[in-house]
Image (cartoon, rainbow over all chains, first blue to last red; front, side):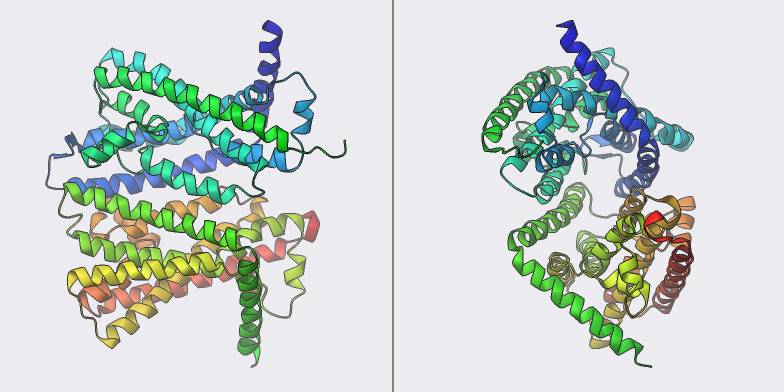
Length: 269
Length: 265
């Protein structure tokens, strides 16, 4: 057990080194994300002009939500893991993992965890620089249960994010080019994950449908817990649904891996 | 004296090649058309959701906002259709030395680099964006005369020049930075502002995004032509911005080109 953990610890450390090489890329991306935040502040500031609340929340609560979403994008979301997996399959680099006593999913998950640790830390720099300008607009709730509930929600969200990206990467066993499908799904994930607007602003029927989809648990759910958009009952019910989606996605990922390997052909050495 | 027709001939040949390629990879064409359509839908959904809860954003009603969004998307799709692939490849070509291929061509390097590829999926979606503009104009009961339509087209053209220049400035940084990845993302961050009414910007945001960077005026000026007719300040302002930013892009590109040292750069 310990030896197995050691393998993935090494993969994590390798991932950490690999991500640190691209620290400037993450930093530049983080800096430009402040422009996105500025656009959000201006648009929603104008939408709230002359009114106290929109959808039951005030301007500060809404801006807090979007700032939290920005941080979570760097902390738990999949960046280009699907593309990396796709390239490893396409170029035959995956063959080395088939001959070694290593679980490819756990190997990739270790690299993902390392990359998010680096990008999650680096986004704190631009956010810290912006803090003097935005701190008046921040309104986090103070209930301690939110932090307790947010921790497992964040871990499960990261797993949902990664496993969906992993499944898309594995589609390369069937399709030569998956980039179009990935960008297509990004649009769906951005909307139904609450990155474009808080999902509680949707008509109630659509919001109810979204609650049962995996995208809801990618980003909106932990952000809603942290920023006070959902209560304890909805949070505990959501955690159960989120865990259910993780199990289902893991099963899908396993099935894709097993069936995909049957189609895979390794040539040369 | 024959430079312009010669360049147009080269551009037409590149366009023919791109269209033939799109017909060869039809599945790819359909997927990428859908990708762009979905992302346009995301922007539309944002407007619809906000206007479920409010009647006005900075004094603009829903239909006016759709007109502005349609105009912004139209300019962006035209950029994607005509220039995106060429400029996206520029970064890679500088890194691996493939820019040599363009240097050897009989014409302006900047023109060749920019017009090498045409993306039909972007152009198809520019028709969808135009459809959104027409729908919004219908909702508003607008009946623009021929002069207004011609001015709208000219200002959309100026907007395209500004978008192109900003993207060129971003990608030309590869001559100094080796990798322009991430910097290109800056372009997408900036165009978010072009979907917002100018009246939403106050204080420092107004100085930066309205006066220093041409990201707001680029779509607001054409949209205002349809809404309010000819406003000299807006029209001439946009044309001036277009000339200024194109000049800057040409200058920076050629400065960067001097640093290019083939495959070793």
